[in-house]
Amino acid sequence: MKTKTHKPNKVAIVTLGCSKNTVDSEVIQSQLSHANIQTVHEDTEGADTVIINTCGFIDNAKQESIDTILDYAEAKKAGNLQNLIVTGCLSERFKADLSPEIPEVDKWYGTFELPQLLNNLGVDYRKELLGERKSSVSKHYAYMKISEGCDRPCSFCAIPLMRGKHVSKSMEDLVTEAKALVRDGIQEIMLIAQDSTYYGIDLYGDRKLAELMDRLSDVDGLKWIRLHYAYPSKFPFDILPIMNAKPNICKYLDIPIQHISDNVLKSMRRGITKRRTEEVLDRIKSEVSGIALRTTLLVGHPGEYDKDFDELKDFVTRYQFNRLGVFTYSHEEGTHAGTMDDHVDMELKLSRADEIMALQHDISWGHNQALIGSTQQVVIDRIEGDSYIGRTQFDSPEVDNEVIIPLNEGYIRVGDFVNTQIIGAESFDLIAKLEK
Image 1 (cartoon, rainbow, N blue to C red):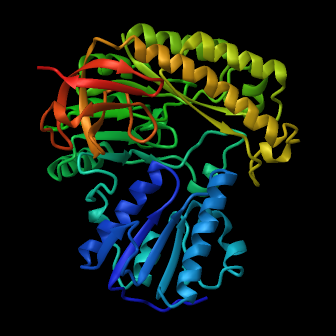
Image 2 (image 1 turned 180 degrees about the vertical axis):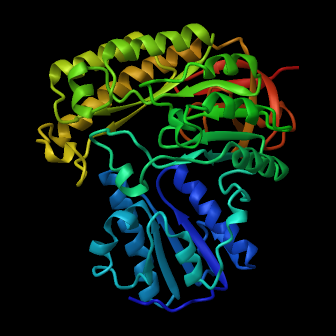
Image 3 (image 1 turned 135 degrees about the vertical axis):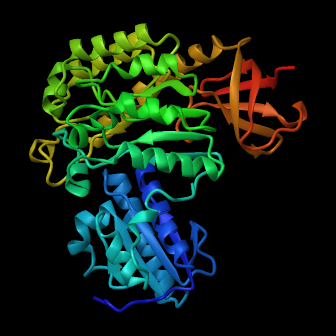
């Protein structure tokens, strides 16, 4: 294994997986840029060094990471690349297995080895830069990671194996980071974590998500704050009055339910029952009028039988989530579920996922049809063809609905917030015109 320092001329960072990896890649870029090293995301043309930030969460993500590493290994063998570095979750978990198989990789780093990665590139790690970064996904929105790791014992999840125990960032550091992002033009932040509702317990001895959201909402120039990954067990209801009181906190909540059958919830080690899950959802909807709820479901987990899946379908139909995504279960080495019989074959898993999404297709269509004629504030994310593409406060980038506004409606800049009237709707898109 090579260990020599390589001072690059240009570094390209290739990010795979979730938005939490995106933030990590932005931190790497900030450190390198402050050392006067040209650093870009995704565009590898002219780069002598490529850093691949991998995902190791589920089978498909792991395979994508491995395929990407192999592609760049071939580029290195062809002489198109001097230095290939792999970091992130896949590297943290499997570097001992992968490094002998892919010798073209110069160095493998885990999720806690940023200083060592930088040192390999001739750069000193600067802790004071951790709150300073540029969004790689947009000039007007950014993800902000409020904590790292997870203390939850979910049977199917390998995140604690790759990211460790829950560690909150201090409120002071997060407010400073938010102010720096706003100075750089960011108007919307998505608060992310493995479990955002656990925020503060390790630092302050109590859940402090409500206080954090309150303090962030006071940052001048921050127009939207959006909360992701709120665990339903021991949900911090004190965030709900804050959502009502603060106009720049979106009435949007990403709350991954995973399943509703008590049998499967117990097998998943979710620490919550069907009855309690429904009580949490009912209270959220009753206390925050008009809130858009997004959830994620997992089908095919060991212990899921036809009756459990039928119960899940009934739940989806009854609760009419505004946004919904589905994963199929995959066996993960080192997890509790990995020791169980994976009795649901892949064909059935995929069929169940398709059934859920077919239900959601109709539910989303109904939600969107109800918006026709309403006035909605929309942020413009991009221009595509002959249309502006934007989002309402009820939609997060990349995963939720979009609003289509014809270019001939008038001149709008990307990043502008505009008032629109909804004039048409499909299952996952709205059509709008500017409100005159």
